[in-house]
Amino acid sequence: MPNAIRIHRHPLSGHAHRVELFAKIGGINHELVDVDLMAGEHKKEPFLTLNPAGQVPVIEDGKIVVTDSNAILVYLARKYAPDWLPTDPVREAEVQKFLSLAAGDIAHGAATARLVTVFGAQLDAERPKAVARSAFARLEAHLDGRDWLVGPKPTIADIAIYSYTAHAPEGNVSLDDYPNIQGLLNRVEALSGFVPMQSTKVGLAA
Image (cartoon, rainbow, N blue to C red; front, side, top):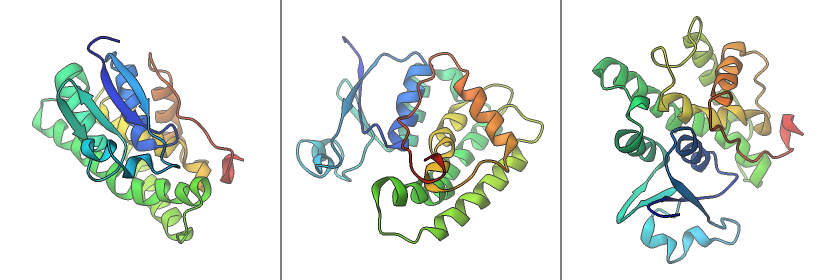
C-alpha cells in the first residue's frame, strides 16, 4: 500500500484500536502491523528502536515516528483529518480535557480492570472498577443533552474514549446505568468506516 501510514498495534489493545479506528473513520491511508505482545515482541529490537517505552501503538509516517495513542490522534487529525480537531481555542481545550480523561481515569479505570480479566494481570480488581464508575458518572452527566463530547460533531475526543469504554464490561464494569454513554458509543459505531475492536468473552461480556 503506497504512502500508507504503518500502525503498529495489538488487536486487543484499546490504545491501538483508537488509532486504527480514527484512521479508518478519517479515511487515512494505512496498514496494520501486528506486534506479538504475548511473545514480548514490544520489548525487543527492532520495536524498541521505534518506541523505547516498549508500548503499542506506534505509527510510521514516512520517516516520522509518533508514539502514544493520543499524541497520534492529534498528529493524524492535524495532518490528515483537520475537521476532527477544532481550532477554536475553547473547543480545542475541551478536546484536550477528554484526551486527558482517556489517558487518566479511563486508562486507570476501565482499561486496568480489563487487564485483570483479559490478560490475567495481578492487580487489585476493585479499585479500577471504582475509578471507572466515577469517570463514567462524569461522562454521563456531561453528555446530558449532547450528541458528542465537544461541539456539534464528532472529534478525536469521542474516538479517544470509545475503545475502553465500549469494552468496559469485559473488565466487569457495567454500562447499564449510563444511557448517555451508550448513546455516544452507538453514534460512534454508526460512523462511516467504523471498525470494532476484537472482543473477549470475559467478565460481564462472557
